[in-house]
Image (cartoon, rainbow, N blue to C red; front, side, top):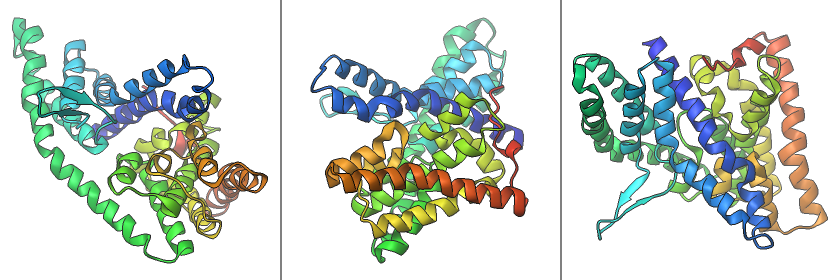
Length: 342
């Protein structure tokens, strides 16, 4: 079971990186450029479309981890897409595709589909090519679709808890929300999904944004010795790369959570605001600081605050806490952050 979960989480992590990083890197920047160079709207739209293919890519990546055959792998990807919640059937019969789906349900549906195709194995014989994709869609795919509302409701409970924190005074609220989102961003739960469901905005979104930023920057620094530079840098765009390692060893997130607590408290003190979208992306593509500057206004004071809170302090605080937890307390080591692509 441990090996099964490990492989599934690895596939989910890689799928998330492949699909979300393109938009995270360029999305917010392109929005500033498009009014002057309209062509880039096509580039932006392409990155958004790729995000909606996340369920398929997660299913395929998970299938690769389990060394499934090409037909089995594609079947898992199709089932994950059906159970993801990415598509909506309209009253006129048309189908729309938007968002990235419910990440937890994508993982559950992928797991069911993997078990299903492994059970079928070679039983279908010469009918494998025709029957396996259809059966995988109609059995685990539709099971995933049927449990989707319940998984969404569970995510909503998390959101309600976060909303409760917003009723507290800003500094405590900011610290707690930042800590929660610093953990959500390295878990199977979608920070964008949670923030969107509860329409987290204002200081709550700003604190959440800095929590995501704390994990992204912290995981980048922590993994530098265990991975190549490109892999380490990718953590800034999506800290979910460490999802497998985090769920296997939750203690690796302690330095980032401590960093998030301080940054979240400062979000309350300096009135850092954001939107549900920025709350989910953090520093990726500079979504967080750009959204804050868009709300606050571009002036010397806001620019300095954004640079300090979104870049300078996340680096400094993570360095301090990583040194504390690694060298002094001996709770983490660099190998804990190794990303396995095999």
